[in-house]
Every structure is written in C-alpha cells, then in structure tokens.
Length: 304
Image (cartoon, rainbow, N blue to C red; front, side):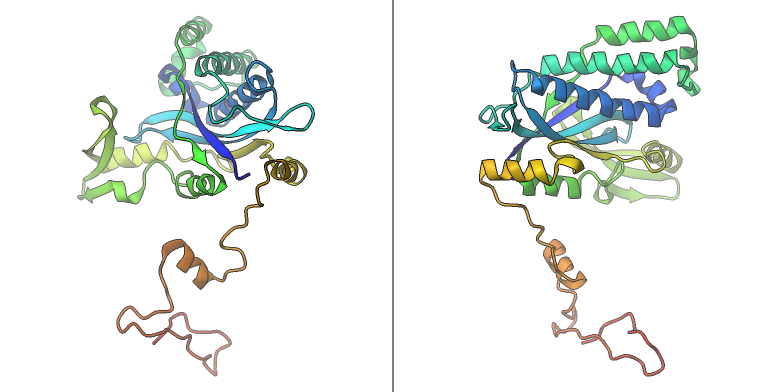
C-alpha cells in the first residue's frame, strides 16, 4: 500500500543469547510469534487504534561488529481496517506506546520460552549448559522479567517505494556488506564498526581471519528458514481482496514494479544505471555476435 509505514525494532536481553543460539529455529520462531502477537493484540485494542493492521517482520542476528544480537525489525503499516471495514489511522503518529509494546512482548516471549522448557524441547550447548538446571533457568527468567526490554521506533517509511528499497537493499545481506571491509592480510581482517558509545561514529576494527569467519558464520540462518514474513493486511492470503479494498479507500494506485516486462539489459540499466550495450572503450553500441554455424547458441561475449 502506498501509505506511511513505521519501523519498529524488538530486542531481547543479552542474557538470553546463549539459549537462543543453542535453539535457533525454535527461538527465532518465538521472536516472530511474540512480535506479531503483540502488534495484533495492541492494534485491535480500541485504546490505541482498534483496527486490523499489516506488517512485515525481518530477523537480524547481528550488531555492527558482527556480534550476536538477535532482534526483529518490523515494518508496520500506519493504519488498518476497523470492524466496519473502514480505514482507520492516527494521523502521522505511531499509534502504540513503546512501554506497553515492550512489556507485552516480554511477557509473550518468556511465556513461550517457559512452554518450550516444560515440554523439554530446548537444547543447551556451550555457555547455555548451566541452564539445564531448573533453578538456574528460573533465575534467568526472573532476571529477564525484571529488565526493561528495549523496543523502539526508528525512521518511518513514506510510501511503498521506500519499503521496497529497504527490503531490497538491507534485508537480504548477512552480517556485513562488502564496502565495510577495508583491508585483509594473511591473518587479519580490518572492517569498520559503529561505536555507539561515541555518538555512533564509525571506526576501524581489526580481528583475526578465524574470528572474522566465526562471527560471520554465527549469522547464517537455519536451513530453509524464512527471515522475511508478512502478517495481517500484508499477508499473502489478504493481498488480493483486503489490499485492493484498502487501495480503494485510500485512493492510491496499485504499485507496479518498474522492472515489469523488462529484459535483463533493461533491468541492469534501471537498477545500476549501467548500459551494458555500450562499449566502455570506444563508446559505441555493443551488438551480439551472430550464431556460430557449428553451434546452436550465442557466444557469451558482445563486441562493438
């Protein structure tokens, strides 16, 4: 939908990291369950919005230094359908208080964690082994209940195109992008990290090659794990009827991809502003060579 979106982040206390890492599939899923249940429950409450909303959840497991930091990024549609199937929004402000989101999310996530413990579905490896003891596990839960879980709203998205740009550029990479790697030797890797203790300034960090690989591999998701999930009005089952109804109510046009009906050469030109049919040496137009009479396919290169 071509409407405002809010960027909400759900985080968990670092004390839970060892257990989450030992049970990635189960406890990553639990993050989605708790975040989606929290948003649905609060958005339907008439005190806040009183409507069915739509949102997209994306799992990230890394911090700037590639440390282990599981959290959920949520792109929340800035409105929804009420009981009378009419569009309802709050007029530019995020409709849920962060303190309430944090408390509800904390309760739902820890409740699912306790259920998994009671059903003996959790595994404990490495630094998480101590939590096999029921008393230590209860102490961990009590400590997590006492903490304030951080939930906050980052920048907002203005319309469908900005959401698509975010999903396309940010969510499909793992841990680090190439431009942050500054140099390598036979034994070390130097990359830039954000120093949150120094107003978010970027600084260089050098670690061993083995440590770099170890940190990177921590963030490879479980096999066939779906990191981007759609809910509510933005879910697959609602994208035809309800999304069309919302577009009619909002008077916005259906988003049509700028890549529709384009061939590969045209897509590269739109996405990267590169004309692959133009010779980089002489500036002339490139043409595909004719088929070789002994071959049924074109040769791989082009010439001017």
